[in-house]
Every structure is written in C-alpha cells, then in structure tokens.
Length: 442
Ligand code: GDP
Ligand code: MG
Image (tube, rainbow, N blue to C red; front, side):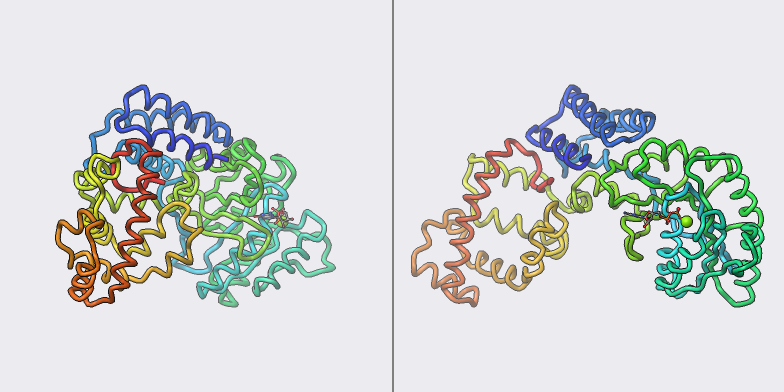
C-alpha cells in the first residue's frame, strides 16, 4: 500500500544525518513511484513532486528537527494541500431549508449516503427530509424508504399509483413540503446511469434548477480508479458541484485516483464513506487523511510540538551518549523526561507515536504520579550516582529512598528498569545509525 511504501522511503532516510541533493532526488523518485502505484493522477504527482523538491532544496536547517523530519513535514504539508487543505463543512442556508443535492453514477452510493447524511444531521439536532428524486430504477424509491426508516427520517416520495412521475416535480414539491413542515435540511437523492450520458446530465441539471441547492455533492466510488477523475470532470462541466463524497474507501482499491479529485477539479472532498452501515461515514479531514497516508499516526503533531519545545542540542548530546561516546545516565534520562513533559501529558505524547495503537492499554495506564515519583528519586541522587548507577549500594539506596519519600524497593525497581531500558535503547540506537534528533520519528 501507499502507506507501506512511504514508510519504507522514510526509513531509508532516517539513517542519514544530513541530506544531499542526491538523497533528496532519490527520495522524490521513491515517493513518485509510491504515488503512481497508489493510482494518484499523473499531473497531481508531477505538481506534488516539484513542490516538495523545491521546498526541500530551500530548507533552512531547523534546530529542533533532523532533515528527515523536515522532509516528512514538507511531504505532509503538500499532501494536505492536494487533499484540499482545510476541512470543508456543510454550508447551511440562513433561510432554511438547506438543500443538499446528491449526484453521481448509478451504484456510486448516493442512496446509502443519503441515509448516512440524514442520520448524521439528526445527531446534530437538525430535522432532515429525504427526497426520492430517483424514479428511474425500479424500486429506487423503496430503497430510499428503507434507508430512511433505518436513519429514522421521513422520505418525501411520489404517491404510489400515479405512474412513473416526474423527478423534477417531486424535487420541487419537496422543498415546499419541507418549508411547511419545518424540516431544516432537504437531501435530494437523484438517479444515476452506468456511464455519463446526456439525458442523465439534463435531468440532474433540471433538478438542480428546480431546487436551487445550497450544496451539490458529487458522490463517487473510490474503487473505479482514474475514471473517478474523468467522471468528476464530466459532472462538474455538466451540472457543476460544490463538494465531493468518496465512497467505498473500505474496499481494497488504492484510492489515489479519488484523492486526486480535489486538486484536479478544484473542489473539496467533504465526506468519506467506508462501509454499508449508517455509521460508516465521516467528515473528510485533509490533514488526518494525509497523516494516515503517511502512516505516521499523529507523529506530525509531535514533530510540531517538538519544534516548539525541544532543545535539539541537548537531545543530540543525549543521542551521542546513547551511541556510546559517553554512557547514558540517569541525569540524561531525567532531562529527556523533563523535555518530554514540557510537551504535554506523557500518555498523550506516547499515544501520538506511530504504532501506539498496539499498546493503547499500556499507555492509558501511565500514571503521571509514577513519573513524579521517578523524578523525585533521581533528584535525591548525587550527580555521581546519576551518572553511574553501579555505585548504588544498599546504604546509598536507602538514603535516596528516604530523601524521595519512597520505599527502597521503589528505588531498586527504578534502577533495574533503567538499566534494562538503556540496554534496549543502545540496541535500537545502533540499529538506527546516526539519527539526528532525539524525537522518535516513526
Ligand atoms: P446509488 O446508485 O448511487 O444510489 O448507490 P447505492 O447507495 O444504491 O449503493 C450501491 C451499492 O454500494 C449498495 O450495495 C451499497 O450498499 C454499496 N455501498 C454504498 N456505499 C458504500 C461504502 O462506502 N462501502 C461499501 N462497501 N459499500 C457501499
Ligand atoms: Mg440510488
């Protein structure tokens, strides 16, 4: 997947202290391949690579971040840009009802989305009305009625027995109905075809004219690959839309094509669907999607905070000690811990690390008071003791325990845990090579 590829790229970089132009070129080549393999639109990839490269070459060396972290940050920034930048919320009309019209090919997931949207709006104390303006497919109305029942919202539909009916008229009538019955959002479900065709476009355009929507949402199946971009273009030219909804992101599609729509068409992705259930749906946040693609958890937030609070020189000194130049002692441990604490509650910081999900339980268990105790114990030691725990005999340990107001067994436990942790860190440090900063970057 794109995630795996990019994380390999960054892993390769991480072993470097400083980056040369050749390193940057090689990295850009890898990222380019990764994006193309994920089916991201070619012109989008080109623009992306040149923007990232330009910014990488103009890098001012940041004090807090190593070059890899800086590149990750740039890649992330640009990715957020491709995905549309800011989260785009529904624009509610000042004069209700707000009208949301759904358009897209048959099978894209419009009717399913109508239910999801309605249920989401209900949770926000809106009073939505679903409108069955798809009178093309046999039983399309019935499907919307089932969806409406599940979401607990009313469906406005042509009376049965009146023949096929006119979807434009139904849509028009629904607005009047909503106004009279005080529904404040109207969601108009329309018909789709298997492919783009003129008749379909005309009908959608007529409905649009009849209901004058506040938002036209183009709904597209992320599994259709590059056709997603082409279809989006056709719909934008045919009827014009305000935002995009990606569906079926739960499928095994690579999804890159659909993610290119925002940049190619210049319209924001507003929602994403990832399943058939009512709840399998979310507001689309470009920044969250970007960090998910980069496979970095919220490491980017961490990098940002580190930039603000971390003293790079100090952490580099600690890293060098880990590398064996000087032995890493409890004093270093204490100052690293204090640096970390400046960034916020430890459980939160650890929770932002990539892969932290695996130890979620353990992280939630971290007790800040425990950390206070550790600090108290280290503070009760002489500098010499902090530097070399091997001199901690029984009488020193009991003096420290008294000073810190803890049991000798607490001191023993800390020392043992520190020695074990140091062994592990030394192993990690040597396998990672000369990583510059002190922040774990994934
Ligand atoms: P419409 O023709 O645009 O109204 O599409 P429908 O809402 O009828 O959806 C077509 C099919 O796709 C149905 O079987 C839905 O259950 C399914 N579907 C819709 N959205 C999603 C989704 O996000 N994930 C998955 N896996 N299936 C979806
Ligand atoms: Mg439908």
